[in-house]
Length: 135
Image 1 (cartoon, helix red, strand yellow):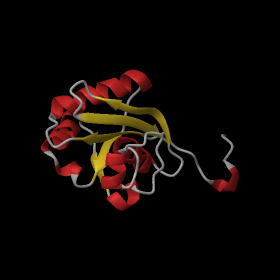
Image 2: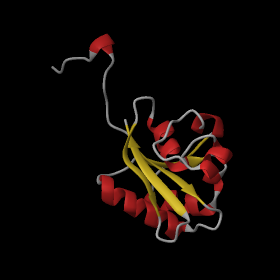
Image 3: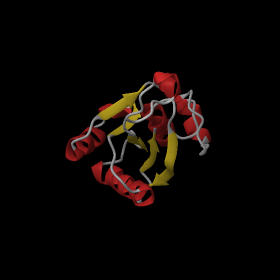
Image 4: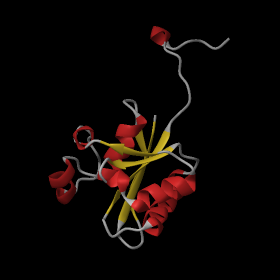
């Protein structure tokens, strides 16, 4: 029988989430390229993709989630603003209150014990960013 962690909490499965930031002109290929680049760094599989709640309604994001057969989640801007990210972009800080949308989204969705496995990468066309967090 496995020992329980202190406090009686039962540990389960690691959650791996890719966060995205992207321009309005980004298409599914832009997001797919950013995803490929981040997975090349981190390896393994993922459980969901995530971005800011307004962006989660973009066709490119929804189409990618559907193609991957994964949940496509949206995080409220207030929650993103609570995340401290290694990447600091003044433009993103002004708009979302955090330094990197993709890093903040990944961290927020992966939960309170999340850590970045792969920091911000940029798609070849410069229209999308991705980062991977796990908890």
